[in-house]
Length: 138
Image (cartoon, rainbow, N blue to C red; front, side, top):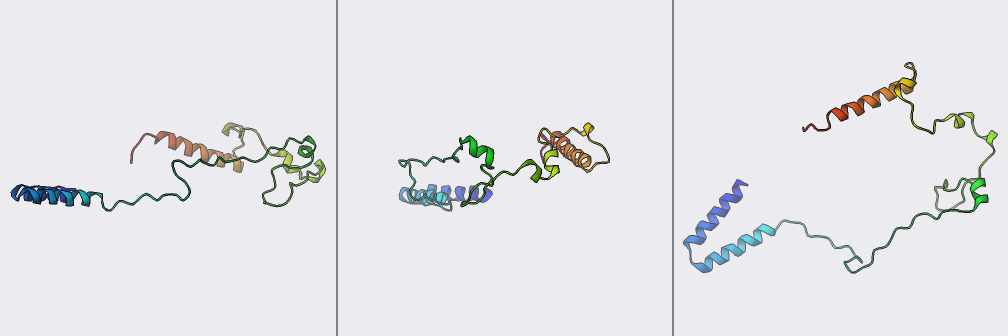
């Protein structure tokens, strides 16, 4: 910044001492030097102010009740193929039905000799630390 001010002072003093045509020439050179170095905006191909934007479409919603009860709709991750067919209750492992699908358990609800307890304790300590240091600057 100090080099910029020094150059500007030198340019102004030269303009003041020389004739009027030289002052105009110096000011034009200086204004060109200010704008150089900035990257030009890249124009996207096929898109402009007058072009209509394409709207994103979501996946189609299946409303067929027979298909919803017999297939896992939306579970197919491939472009081609069909959704997997649902199996009977006995063909799935027992642990699948013991998963907690609700809110996570609180720290006081877990046993202290459990791996989940220590993972939850660490997570809550990180949350506490982040809340305490939220407004502090580096």
